[in-house]
Image (cartoon, rainbow, N blue to C red; front, side, top):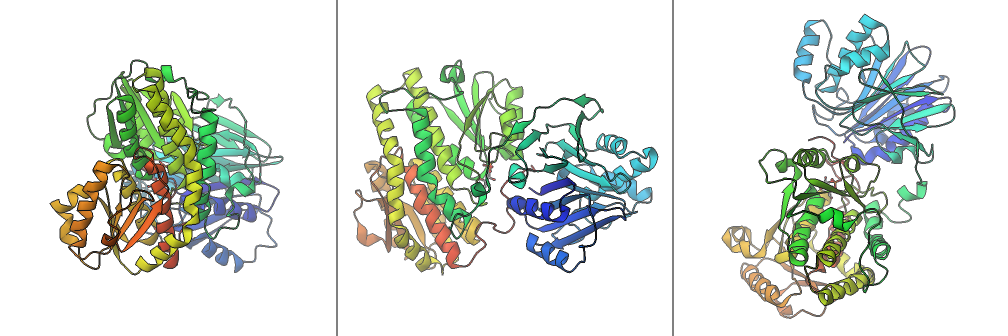
Length: 614
Ligand code: AGP
């Protein structure tokens, strides 16, 4: 949530900030702003809405004759205060000399605001952030040193904050601070960068320092000094990133979401082949010793949010079926505030595409205090979740730009299948012939995913036909209940359609009251015989209420065709592995539905890719 960027050096500050913010726009787009420092003073430009509005503001300014030596920028995902210009960052001290940008939440901002107001500071926004700028300003007036002022001020802050701060009187430095919100430094030649995330630095530098919590950096043009919050110097490693501009381009697709949907077969194929050469040999992970992972473990808990939580729901079915280990799943936001059974015999698995989701990280830190072993499954090996974990399963799905998660979801599923199979193999808790058959089938999944793309047009036509409806219901049973939740989430987040998912057997206990000819029902028909018949009965109940009915099913298991208004199919697959295939048509249906409505598919309103606030 919120993206921040800072630059100090001889190149065009304004352009560097804007291109950095463009790459961070997935973190929020409620407002944008930059502050530029030259010898005359600090200029601040802010605009409501997307970055393009800020660019329009800048186009009206005559900045050509100015020579800026440093600058900071921000894109906002609003927490405190609406998306207005007044609430946009950077925020400025009353004398205009000090500016800062912030990502996170200052929990004690209300009391600070009251205290600072009494001391004569004037507030112009409803943000929590403005309290920080006045607080540092107050300390600066006492110490006349930006570094000392920052150290004094942050000792008084409660909450999460990544900050970039500059003062007109100290144009040789930007101070960057990290506590519970991500921040990295990019090292260049006679120039240095600060950013919330790596995409902002692609094409600018490959040399990165990851700040850890409770660290600050004094960033100058040709030097970077990192200290703890007491002012002690720390020595940090410089790491190399290996990303090109291509990794964050649409490569000819209309939207990132469509491109990322199409990347799935390749990603799943390379994950499978990286961890097992043939279905007849045991699975081996680079960096995870399965014996260590499950030694003395009598239960697994899986903690995640949103789409990653849906992957967790599917994992519960897989692990219980193959490994006979009880699995508890929890939304991270719930786990944090309830009593749980986590202990030294628990394997706590955190699933997070971004690795920065605040709820998931807080929950895992809590699990650790109960002596649980921690496994992180993430697409970002440079993220905070990795530093909370004993074991890490990297998804290697490449940067996911679209706010709606697609390729990371199927990569999470593939990782969870592989893990469960590996545990089952080592613990000998399932018949080896059965496990080999599942592994053989897993190898066939990427090709079957590719086959689904042949029917893109059919899915598109179906989505277009239904795009006139304002509400949707998804139903499924068994392992694919989570597929229904994920399908509904995809549709609602990019179309703003009210889409709800129900266990098909639960329809008759209440939701059936909603049904009429204006509420289409999307039924995911599991391939397995027993469940298939049951869900067909549920569909009969739906049809009897005149609701339009779509079936998503395997090509070989379909009968009762007349019951349905439309039928979408996937290649033949077992019940256990079917979520890997069902997810593609569900994603494509949501995508084409939203595209037909001309929605902002990659950046839906009110959302951000990386939810770094609790
Ligand atoms: C998915 O489409 C969403 N944008 C969202 O639910 C996301 O999955 C959730 O915020 C969790 O993110 P994470 O996987 O990065 O932790």
